[in-house]
Image (cartoon, rainbow, N blue to C red):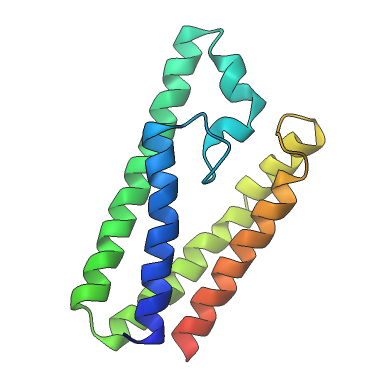
Length: 140
């Protein structure tokens, strides 16, 4: 198994744990589920809003599952060039986190809407590590 395949497979395993958490334990504070957001519990007081939030959570899980299955096909059947390009695509797509999601999660963290405190910093660092690993995996 090449470094590229190892990087993609590791990402698939990590993200699959998030997909499972989102589908089966969305209120969890583990595996980057949405339980870290105080709004998750607060939304339960408003059934219509909570159903909408649940819909969005499941939609994200489904979109992630599509990407993960496509990555699995790329690892199993793609040549090295396609695998490298998929890592670069992952790096670019994952970088979009810093455009909209990171400022929002930082704002919520500062407002005390996330538990544990400083979750945004940990998440931002974790996403940066993913991007670096994707780029390193694509180049070597």
